Image (cartoon, rainbow, N blue to C red; front, side, top):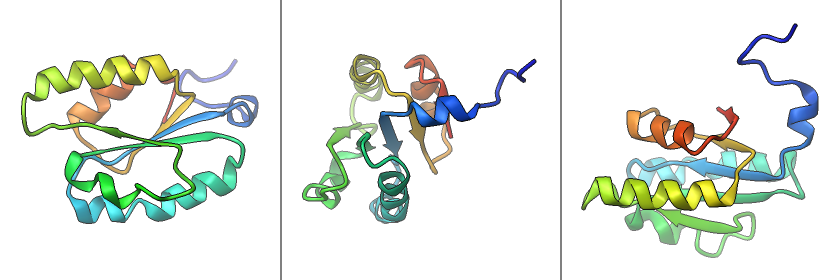
Length: 119
């Protein structure tokens, strides 16, 4: 019997829609570039979106490895933006989410969005 939080190889092979979250400072957003590159290499046919703060959105604006950028403004009206962002994430039906940013807000977004694979 499979352990509850384990991911099997079939699930990994079926990943087609990926979200990468980094909502910390601009320097931290720059540091996810290798993660974006690795995700594109490992999942070449997948949609890869990133979620960043508005101040960092231009970092990935012309990056051909990114399909779209989701903005999460956590500084102004955080609760309103939280639920708007959650709705957007749920609608996109991501198969996996990767985040080097450990925060309660990010963890709640990933969990409430129902994304099965959370790394």
